Image 1 (cartoon, helix red, strand yellow):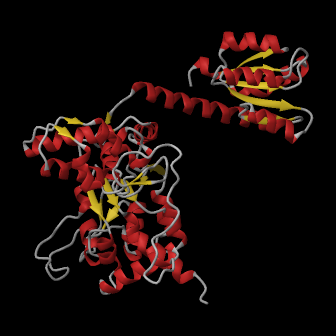
Image 2 (cartoon, one colour; image 1 turned 30 degrees about the vertical axis):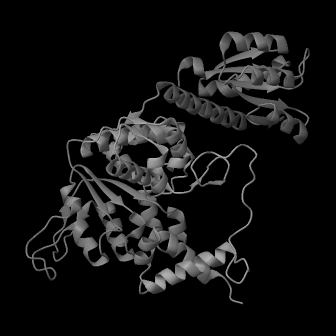
Image 3 (cartoon, one colour; image 1 turned 60 degrees about the horizontal axis):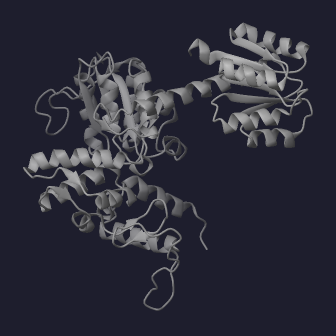
Length: 474
């Protein structure tokens, strides 16, 4: 943290108490200033621009709440920690409502004060980072496109962890760009000159996954006609990316854990271990700890891999990034298809912003590519998107729009569900269960196949089916 950001102002009318607080903070090396009145505090705030203010609410010339209100009105970034001797929760709550970040009730220990100030300074630092990134407006980061605050936070995590050897666990819905995140980590790391090897654990049959990761010897199983290095050996010195890690069978999770602990791999059909140096990056669209609690993911493996967590946000939470990505995709597919598209009509942009994008960036790419293939440019219009996106659920109003145009403010959302043939209305949860069970039945009991036909991730169906089985009968 820069020296000027570490300024701390103590506003306390008792010189003895003010000096005591300063002594409490001295071992941490903070630059501490003291003001004994409200007016002196306002002058010090103007001159010093402190990062943290320790504010006693009972001052000789004014109420501390007046200072809080002024800071709030001026949009001052200082983190204010209120000090009160009255032990009144109501007073502290009033202060928090006026913008205080935290409060301390007298008397308190040096450790309590130091910890509270340290936390406030850390939040101040993080807010400064976000502001810095927002001002930079970087539209591209690696293969990512976007400058929303949510993505700026992701970029910061990637930059901070890229040089480390620590394992990274990337989480986020399908189609958000978790592999792009893994690639960015590799490209910014000291391992960039070596291989980045990706394995999709959901796309490889369970009986072949061990061979894909660790390799095999000739004759180890039917079809093993020669020795073959696995992904771990191929990535030696580089990065091994295990996508959809929660889909990995439990027996193979044990072998992966041993590999992480020892750095040695044993190919299928061999007894000889080989040392391999890789950086592990994993990804999942599930919630890892829920998988641990459900017994589908080893807890010891979770702690080995979940060292640096990175959350990639869904597209609906990325604001106007949707338009930045759409324009870039339009340019790319127009060149690929030798079309003249170069512009998205304003009403088409509104349509793109209104859509909830359940399939995230992958869905957006599919829509733009289809529109380019099926139409001629130079302008991408709402009509071209109509058949591809379908009825749009407005993210802001929560209402469905048949023509893609935003509904006027105040328009009531539909409240009636479509009736069944006999005139009754079936609960949505029950209708969804019947639909899923029918899909699984028609798919011969294969949940993955049913999920594919329904257009959802298999983990979604597994989770719902488990919830149904846990519910008491009757």
